[in-house]
Image (cartoon, rainbow, N blue to C red; front, side, top):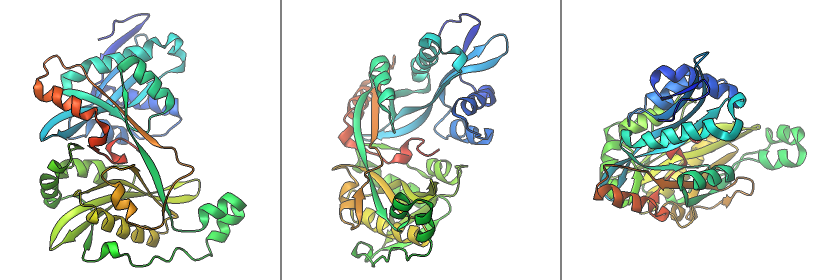
Amino acid sequence: MPSDRDGIRFEPLAEKHADGANQLFNEIFQQARPLAHYMWKFWRNPAGSPVGMVAIEQSSGRIVATNTGIVRRFQVNGNEIRAMFACENAVDPNFRGGGFLFRSVTGGMVNSAHEHGVCFAYGGQSTDEAIRIGRRLFHYQDLFELLVHDCILSSRPALKGRLGKVGDSLSDILPRARLQPSEAEEGWEFEIHSSFDSQFDTLWAELQGQYPVCAVRDSEHLNWRWRDCPIGAHQILSAQKGGKMKGYLVYRMWEDKGTTIAQVLDLFAEQDSTASSALLSHAITLANQGSADIFRIAVRENGFLSSALNALPNFKVSKREAKDRVIGTAMWCPDADSVVYESQRQMLQGDTWFYCQGDVDFLD
């Protein structure tokens, strides 16, 4: 626990701090996030309460700094461990002198992580500054990078880039992409879901051992992460063969400067890439029918999903979107055993991860 000083006291993040922490976030980042969104993200997670620290101005009782991490359950070589991704830090500009509050709430969060059973920390969408600070203060290291791939479904992105508003208007009257039936879908049946049931638990139980490092994807987690997410509806698609589920895909439709993007946030299937290719192919058709301008997915080069992507035409690496850089570090665990140490070593080998962008709070 950081030591109190200069009219500031520190407390481990608790549910009673929710309103103050959310208000600070909204003020710093000029957002209007409802409290219900904050509660879903940090306090309704079935993996447990968040890891965090707050700094409170004693005279007013106002939260002036916070750093928070979300707990995730991972399967690592057949053992379940707990990790976290540090996803939200904020410091009131009037209290930033010398970086004391940032270091204090961040150090307090890191030093209390073991009380939540956490032995590893990771983060995605990492900026140069975040990586630099993470390396210096917490020994973060690069794990892997995701390359963003786009399948263009309409003329809107190109016409807007060349002609601005005129191009945007023209794209509304021009025909959309004419997708040909893909061989990747042959022999597969598809189902659209509104929630995750026991079929997804069965799929997770059958496939989790195929990946050395993989965040838990049981129905309890998936319903919280996707069905209950207050951001908006997610499209949930499964692929089946012989009456049995072989994989699923989750994507979200969102708008970026007038361009509608169908973004894949989770895709889980067996290592044999055929199910993943079938899911991607069918999802592209659905997104096109839903008037998406771009279908987008980020995958690790030579990773578990890259072969599925390579089997499909029309995907190109985005020239505009930056690589998604994922970093991680082993956490101090005073009561660690050989399973924890071996799991930490495995998680530091980024090429053994199964990972999708929804494994952090991307777009949330």
